[in-house]
Length: 517
Image (tube, rainbow, N blue to C red; front, side, top):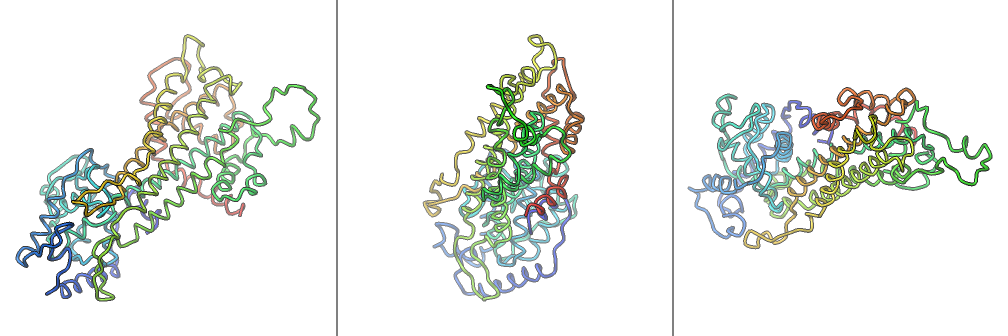
């Protein structure tokens, strides 16, 4: 499963079906475990868990052991995960279980698929997992829902599990051998949320590239800052891609200037040149700033895809080699590190957006627009003065949230889990940073649209710029008189988050990138 397939199922709510090859792997693993486990001491089958693994469990108590594990670890606190994050987590767990190394009964994967398809989501809390034996607490709440207990988010409200199963005409999961531990042990919460983070962060990079391009149009900047010649002598793929995107998105612009036409092919005799020879860094260095952001997003995508398609259970029931292997595949360091890196670069992206916003609102910088892009009467009206505050404060919050979780290991579980990943915390915090960045970009976009109308240049914009401007104006009209803008700002943010900007410009961006190569 790649991130695009993941997106179709999680974001676009496409239904899933289980192929026969995967189901055969699940059956093979279960059948092997059923025979192999007889008369042997195997962790998670007939022992206690974690530091209590030295206690043998009687055969009569083996099923109860699994139920006890699930119920005892349903200790989550904090806010409920959103439906999209829960759906992503469920899909990630299903994909792992279908690899056939967990020794679970086929009923488990069939039920999990049915719950996903019916958009029935167990109530799962954000606080609880330390990301070492996987996302134990979050996945325990998933398992609780699968055995028919606890509560579900279903049809927009919270309902008891029994009511949901009755309405869907489904039967809860019955424990056979080790379904409890198999569902709990794994990185599926951090991986699922991480997948959503990668999707939303990649869209952010494209939005930011487009807004940066339009700002260069507004200022009638020289286009050589994103030229192929300049950027191809710096050997970073992300930088070259951002510059390529800017050239593609800038097609049709009547505002961007060619340096040689204005400065090289005519003699400049003035002692003091009023027209800027080079723009401020937030406009001129966009490929160099967004390039490493894009590279980090793409690297995170690769890591998430690898984890999504990995066996992250313990122990691993390997029916092909007819053995059971104990280790630490449930440890979440790979995802934790990528989520920390991802939120760091998204914070930098939000900082770029805030500086670009400040450029539009400060007449001493842009030398084109009234203060705060105020189309009304200066002094009496305020323009975007009040809208700048949430952008600035939200960037500050992102900076504070960008501290690393990956290096914040705290031993627990009687020091059995003596070094942990905090991967789910990292993924959830990264998700907050990404949503914050969309708020900052929403304010920036409103300012860009206002600047375009004040300067009356919409007809001279690139094709992409015209689309962006007209789309924004449907949600946030040009204004002179002051009003309370919060709801319209929220609408712009929602539009940014829900629009698949990558799909909108995919052909254009892909063609440009291919040509550049």
